[in-house]
Image (tube, rainbow over all chains, first blue to last red):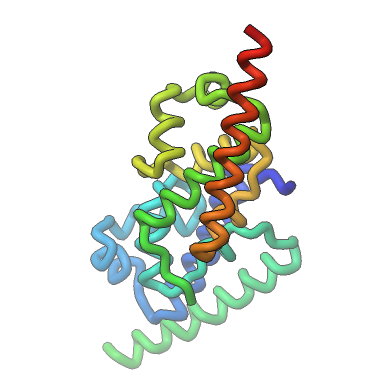
Length: 102
Length: 102
């Protein structure tokens, strides 16, 4: 049975939330408004710097179409590295989209 | 992508925590002491009546050898019914063990 280190789990969940928020083309601010949280709190969750409740995790996951059970399933170092690369690409794309809008 | 209803998820997680606590031959009181929570709070979690933080879920899961990701994976009605039957059997066994001890 795999035992999570809480610090590592927070970071992994945060990465998945960031990825699926970007896939949903949402800013932290937009997501925060939808869930009824502050932009700063979404930032803390995405950086693995806070201890969210189960309800907050469910609300966020449902809104951005993230499978919560999958986000909590332990990933290998290489899977996490791929995820980080994917996030960087998504962030670039997201910034460019928003430039075109303004 | 499966979207959890928060009320249903709380109940499912509570059932798995009850099962694995009993498999670990722990009373709610014993588990509560180990995790630094009250017995009543463990009872609330097991009955799906509270909104625990991620850290509490990790602490409990690690202590009773429950795979948290598995506990959050959506189960069918029949899987939940089997789980409830299993819990009843475990509760009987646990009560009998404690009778013999006293």
